Length: 100
Image (cartoon, rainbow, N blue to C red; front, side):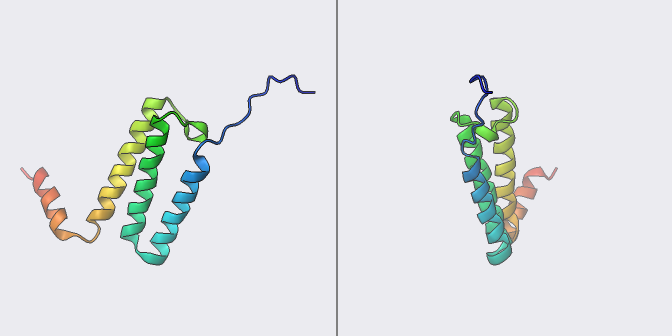
């Protein structure tokens, strides 16, 4: 017997992010790993933006601040890595920033 105290589970934007990740993986396998990584990173950054905007749902794992920072950094690193995959000039430029 339900007394109305049950909290409904909210999915929020989780299905959208999951679909985007599936598309990114298909792009990795079918088209090109570089563009697939770019799509996956972009989807993760969209998840960060949605979490920042207050759409939590199943994306809300920790505090809002921790989720946004984690998703943003991971998405940015994935996009940057995918852009560096076949670009030797950009790799040299970034590595020169860290050279003593």
